[in-house]
Length: 77
Ligand SMILES: [Zn+2]
Image 1 (cartoon, rainbow, N blue to C red):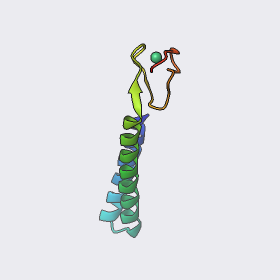
Image 2: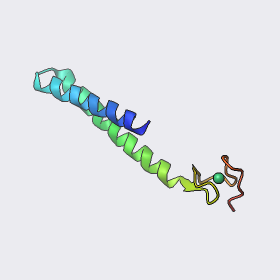
Image 3: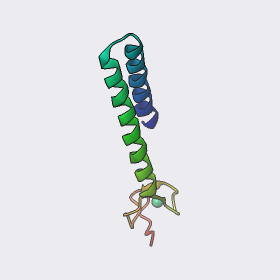
Image 4: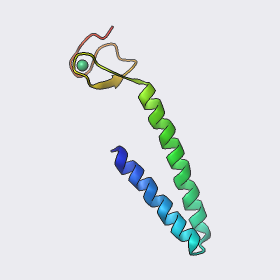
């Protein structure tokens, strides 16, 4: 999932760069869009990580706001 998104963004960047080299004005725009997406995605990933914790019972990643693990039903606090 994460690799797919990153791959798509890299592909977009590559297309934009090639377009830019070939003299298409659109290329710079695509490049900029790719970079913006990458920035947004990185920030999103960082937020996801800080909002998650590991269940001590089944060791699955769950949201910090959960008090009961949705996977195993363990009461975390
Ligand atoms: Zn659990």
